[in-house]
Image 1 (tube, rainbow, N blue to C red):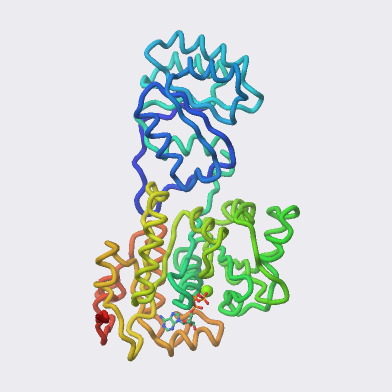
Image 2 (cartoon, rainbow, N blue to C red; image 1 turned 45 degrees about the vertical axis):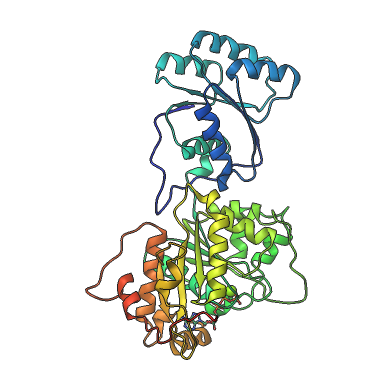
Amino acid sequence: MTMVEAGRPEPDGGAELIAPVPRVSIHAFCESSSLITLVSAAAEDRRMQKASDKSRMGGIAAALSAYREEQTPNVILLEVGSDRSSFLTGLDGLAEFCDDGTRVIVVGGINDITLYRALIARGVSDYLVEPFGTLDLIRVISELYGKAAATSLGRIIAVYGAKGGVGASTVAHHMAWSLATKLDLATVIADFDLPFGTAGLDFNQDPLQGIAEAVFSPDRLDGNMLDRLMTKCGERLTLLAAPAVLTREYDFDQDAFDGLMDLLRASAPAVVLDIPHMWTGWTRRLLQSADEIVLVAEPDLGNLRNVKNILDLMGPMRANDSRIKLVMNRVGLPKRPEIPVKEFVTPINVTPACVIPFDSKVFGEAANNGQMVAEVSGGARFGALFESLGRQVFGRPEVQKAGKGSLIDSLKSTKLPFSFTKKA
Ligand SMILES: Nc1ncnc2c1ncn2[C@@H]1O[C@H](COP(=O)(O)OP(=O)(O)OP(=O)(O)O)[C@@H](O)[C@H]1O
Ligand SMILES: [Mg+2]
């Protein structure tokens, strides 16, 4: 048991990693309305989407009367009231009704070692000293179910296109490559576009089963099997490829990838998910469970509408996370009327993390040769943009090179020959 003191700051950029809370039931018995508010804010968080929760006023007395009748849940959260000794007596009484496996977390306003010891002696799992933040509560619950795993958590970065064909896979693969080669992070790239994924092609690998084996054999899936399904593409880069064959259909339940995600989280510090542009239960869940979302869009009205809808939907459950990173890609495609990037981002109040100009020669040559753009002639400036994106996702400072490669420069140098005019 640990005594958790005053709230750590809520994260911003390179957000703190907390494993998602598993499918457990949580009951809170509060003495203050502020704790009720905090518990319901925690329940909104993406890390709690599998857990169920119920909170009520009345503290230990309400818990005692409830569990004379009901079964105890997986986690009971109890707030200490003004009378500490009657709280401890109540806790002793509660022990008689508690099912095996029920964990108790106590919340109190006093940082008191005597109380803390008394709670340990009664088998309480954690003591949270008020005031604390939403993430403190989620962290404590999460750690009840996997402290060991929590210490080796990888950051899951979901890359998603606001429309099909906007370059989401290109961004995912290049960012993953930059994380591995420029930031020296062991990185896994997982291609969730099972029928059509191009990660194998982009990294010049032969067709592989990879992710299909993982999802079609959930009972056999463990760390060893996952290792066998992944292919090394570089010193620090590993690929979990899509089969890219059409001999079977790929319909999945929304929780089909939950087990795989838990294993991936423990497999490397950086895990990049290349998610196809589909809106299904499982794609939505992958996005919701990611630590970071990189949203790729082209500068047109359909993309703008979709970006706005995604931000509106994801915003509330990501209140304790760093903001979704918007990448404007294929900007300046010749002869295409575009919405200038500034006008695109103003109504949605987002600063793009990266603006990538359209360049058919560099991107086409890299894709055809199974190379990264940084490896082909004229591709260095794009390589710098992907590195910058990786650094932003990991909260690592930019390495500023005099005058070139910064975000502002990329915005300035982006040629937007056609301005967008809305039809009347
Ligand atoms: N900045 C760019 N300039 C020129 N071409 C680009 C750029 N970014 C990506 N492309 C090209 O656009 C095409 C689509 O890219 P990609 O497959 O990455 O898109 P996607 O969003 O993953 O598509 P899908 O919806 O099929 O998954 C590819 O041919 C890619 O090489
Ligand atoms: Mg794709």
